[in-house]
Figure 1 (cartoon, rainbow, N blue to C red):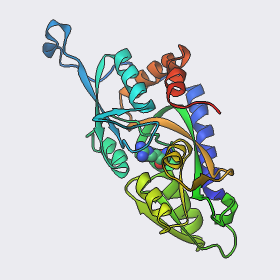
Figure 2: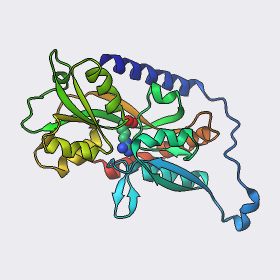
Figure 3: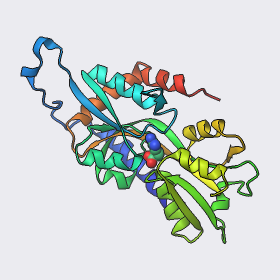
Figure 4: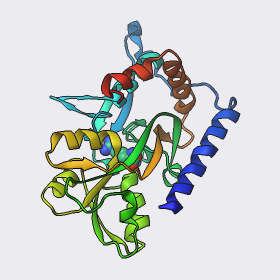
Length: 269
Ligand code: ARG
């Protein structure tokens, strides 16, 4: 656990320092617009947003529509910058590849800033905080996060494939010989495996954890937390959009839009 914890904290610090130091850089130009297409000033450029709409309250389906904190912040950013935002729903493990390949322009998916991901994509400033927590069956003998790292531990841990929950538990537990990690396409699949007794716990972000526990009888979230992380928007390396999105994001934070979107979906305890 400690290994990854340190890495994350170090990156977070570097990020905030970079943010503080970087008033410079970037040409200030946004992606090229085909002016001839803008007849009547109606045509807007489309920003393709990659997400995995299985993660309430950040992104999930309400009927046919993808709603949630990320969807609304994306929409507000699009309005500010003059883009139509087109949401592309995909499996979580396709999100970073879709940015790298240029299939999508930005990714918002309760996406944690990590050193590994920073090798292939850039991140904006953070707009929210997440906490990795552990969901167990109410009568579980796992009572604290430390039980997962205890000498001789041998639990089966469910995660969503390619999430930080997967990354941390693979490194801290599976590779340390302290248990097995079962990877599921969706968090809800992991939760279903837990309910049916196939696995011992699920490591996942706190807000979806709350939603999943509410939707299923007999589950609880351990009081102890695994790790705290920063959510940010991912873009292609050296994307011309990063600077303008950071500026717009800051304006939406300053005028209270981001907080009011978060408050709409997350009620403070
Ligand atoms: N914060 C975690 C990560 O970045 C989990 C995100 C999962 N997001 C989702 N939309 N399913 O790895």
